[in-house]
Structure formats: C-alpha cells, structure tokens
Image (cartoon, rainbow over the protein chains, first blue to last red):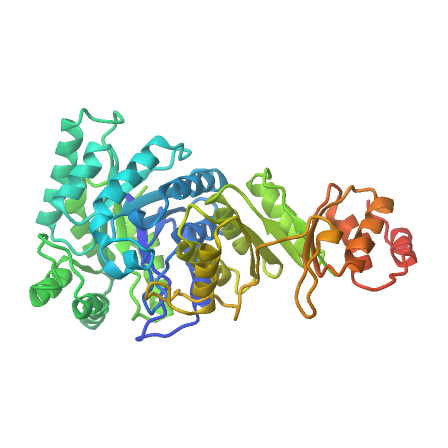
Length: 314
Length: 211
C-alpha cells in the first residue's frame, strides 16, 4: 500500500488569513518534509474564484514541488478537466513527466460549482461531455507514462474510470460501504470492458485522518475535520447519492464525515486502515485550514515515521 | 538597459535549472522561459523553486486556453516565485488579451475574481517585442523591450548593445551562445552605463581571468 498526504489547497481562509506567497513557500517545505519522513506522495486540489485563493492552477504548483524534491510523487487530487483545454493539460503532463523523472500523477475530476464554469464562459450542464472529450484527448496523448486517475463521488463515474482502464481516486468522506460500492463498480466495469491496459487499474482513497493520543487531542482533531466541511454545508455544495449530501442532509452528512474520519494513535490508525488492504493508495487528508502549522508538520512526521512502517507502506 | 537571458527551449530539466541559477548568480535581470503551450508554465514552475531572486519572464501562447485560466497560472507562478513573474503574450485576440489583463488587474471576469491575486501590484505583460532596434516603440516613461540574437563575438555584440541602447531599449532579452559570465562581465556592464569605459572589462579579464 502506498501512503500519501493531501490535500494541499493553498488557501488563506477566514479562520486563518495568510499571505498566499507564504502558503506556496510552505508547499515546498511540506513536500521536502514528506519526502524526508518517507511518504510516497503529496496531492494538490483545485478550485476557482473562491475568496480564499484555493489553488486554481495545480500543474505549475506541482512542478515547483517536484523541483524541490527528489523521490516524492506529487499528484493532482483532482484537476478539474472540463474547465481546461485538455491538449494543454496533456502537454503540461508530458513535460512534468520528463522534468520529474516520472514522479507526477494526474487525477482528474468533473467539478461541481457552477461559478467555476461561468468564469470561463462554460455551462456546467456541459461538464460530462467536456469530461469525456478531455479523457479522450488524454487517452490519445503521450503523457510520458504518467499514471492517470479519475476522481469520483458516484457509481457512474467509477464505472467510467473502470471502462477506460484508469485509476479510481475516491473522495474523502464516504463510509466503507460506499467505498466498497465504488471499488466494485470500478473493477466490474474494467472487467466488462475487456480489461483495458491489461493490468487492473489502482484505487486511491482519501481518508480524513489525524494522529492523536489523548481524548482532548482526538476531540480537537474531529473539530478540525468538521469545521473544514462546514463551509460546504453553508454554501450548499454536496455530492448526491453517497450518504454525504451537504444540501439536503447536512446533519447526517456531518456525522458521516466524522464517522468516516480516522483519528487516534498510529497503532489505532493502522488497525482502522487494515480494512482497506485491497486498495493501492491511501491519501491521508490532513490539509485543513484550522490546525496551527506546528500541528500540521508534527502530523506529517507521525504519518511518515509511525503510521507508514506500521502498515508496511511502500 | 537591463539584459535578460533567453533560455533555449530545448534545454532539458537540469540544464534549464543550472542556466537559470547561473544567470541569477551573475546578477542578470531575468531569464526568459518558453515552451509548447502548457509546458511553459511547468518549466517556469520548476524555476520558481530553483531560483530565489531573478525575474522569470514567461512566454504564454494565447488562443487555445481561456485567458482567465492563463491568468490563474500566471498568478500561481507569481506566488510561487514571491513576485518575480513577467509575461510575454504571444498571439491572442484583443478580447483575450483584455480578459487576461482584467483578471490580473483585479476586476471580475464573468463575475469571478482571480484568486489568489498575484503578489505584484501589476504583472508586466509584453505583447510586442522589437526584433530590431529600429522597430522599438519608445514612449516616455514606458518600458521598451527588445530581443536580440547575439553572436558571442564581443567586438560585434558591443556594437549591437550600443545600438539597442541608443534606440531607447530598456529591457533586452538575448540569446547568447557563450558563457553567461562573459555576458555579465562584458555586456551587462556596458548596458548599465552610458559611454561605458570598456577598459573596465578588459582590466577585469586581466585581474580576475576566467579559468
């Protein structure tokens, strides 16, 4: 099992306002730290036009993080493909593959915020067509061997990834049963499509996770996780048909977020992760806006030096 | 007149970085980074991490990608470099250039603001660069960029630098076939002063000869 960390969003939030240039400098420092403590990968996340400066251009940021490191993989988790020219994404990906010696991975998703499409003169109703066109372009391009994943929150999207022989990158707050359903749909679709690529495409899973020893630390970590999702509730964004819907089921969704979060000692976290032993990549979602920086760096160190060895991370 | 070094877009990763680091070490004003659409931002991102002070002038091809997206890449690069990005915009319609400029300036485009904003108050964006001194557009108080392919033969290149300066060029991007330290010793110096006494460079060669 590969063990990575995410999601680096480069936000200066109302909770913790910061200079953005400092956040970008910390991205490079965090990438170096992740590498030093033996982690496999660091994953970035994209949005557009939100007040906090949520990173809108992942590939230049990935390039800098890769330049600052030597062995770490850097990935997009996820790049919103319908919002971009897929030929340009393909060209950038090929360049990243060369520049990094094969340490870049590309996970793409559809996007769900109407304003992001409007900002580029697009209609969100067109996103599925643009996604499929973009995947066709990526599929035909020479990406320098870059592993490609599709970020999903639904069974149809999981099937889409499987049919194309692409990795499945599963969003963070779903219960084990939903995860199992998505993985099953992905693997079945891959098999029914004639097993494109010949090798079963991998599954990556985001998990809200935080190492904590005492009851007080656990409560605080749970609050950090909850608060990072509350903005979704406030803004009316959600994912349908997954048990996590911040539009119509706010209370149960927040409970679902907390219930699916892994918070505890490294030994407890390893035990909780053992139920995902058929999953190739776990991305520990630790990129919340509330924890102080010292807590984040300690978290990265503990995941790398304590949790990684316990789960036999490669 | 300030001199920047155009990095050959055929340079591979390590050579690209070492050329930029060397230019930074020698006090050049900028390196120019280019590449196929999409790759230029990746090459620039790499140099954001590999350098600390030198300005990175990045050539973007407009037309295929939405100009708001290009503006987003520029802003991320400006944050990664702590405010060292300049832009050369190739192609693009007036409308596309205007949209990119509006986003970078800080007004909404299709009801969206560019976030994060660039570090710099304004991003120097050049849409036209003179290829010959006589083609320079000179307006009082404004920058007048030029681009020169130098020969590496200092007796010829000194004359070229003088011609660019005399024509009013403020920022000259050069393709330079020789060692960057020769460029710094002989031509950056020359471009830094009106009527530069060339004996200074000659004496430097005698007092501190390169290996």
